[in-house]
Length: 400
Image (cartoon, rainbow, N blue to C red):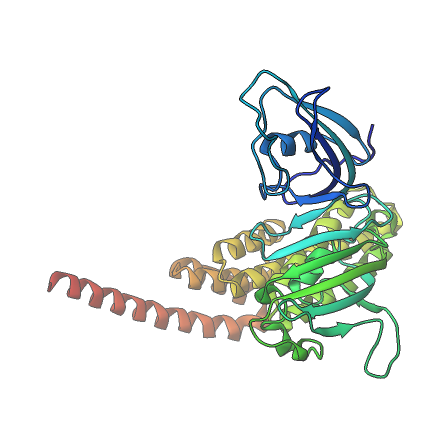
């Protein structure tokens, strides 16, 4: 019997010893050497198809006898039995699955490939830094084509050695690298091959000194060891005041991403924070915590409106509308929600609905009355321009 819970499957690699016989008592026509096991990647037609399917049902360390009623076809790594004629004897393959090398096509396009080369401690995914947190890694970065090293955390320009520490979710390292680190367990080492668009193309604009060493349109390879990570605080285990403090801290980081025009990354942080805060609100609190609980609700409202702002920046106006409606269901007089929804209605050319929101905004919040009047004037102008454009289009149609 083998160990573990994963069977090899595409695009995993398997390391095996194989002995193939023409029959159970027949001649051996293929056998790996003890010191040279066979390594192949699933889905690459490296071994006969039926043999690959059978190995795909095995676990690491398992030894199995595989029988075939008909001779298996020749493949790139294992040839067919010489001179066997179609079919009376049953072929025997004795296989030892020495290792299963985890290979992940992270986004399904083969542009970010992660291959585990050294097992770590823990189980996927419960022991992975999937949630944003502080991580400590060692990393060697190479240009994929030339193999030139452009980054080595074990040796800097001054000859010092030390791991690289950073917080995920803050645009500190390229997207492809961070995606893969979040799928690792402590002490694991993986090789990550990444297309340029998920590596340093565009990333170096953020002033990253490492990215400056990578030419444009250059695919890269990182060899990464996850040394450790700090698990994020579980809000369910915090007091209400601690929840507010932790929530404000995370919101501040998301706000910084928004200001840096990293709207998708900011959205991810807001979404996770809202999800956790809502779970806290649904739990019972003591009377002493009730007042502070209002601060948690205010934090949820603020983050939900920021999600609406992210959606607007990303051109997802129907999503923005949903977030605004969610806040206005809780508080129909929330001026900021009325303002955001009014903006969204303008983008959707819903002029009357936009007017209603800005009129109400000015009525419920005197400080925003001038802002409301400015936007009402703007709506009149935009509606006239839209009608004029529409009229010109119809005239052009009928004049054809």
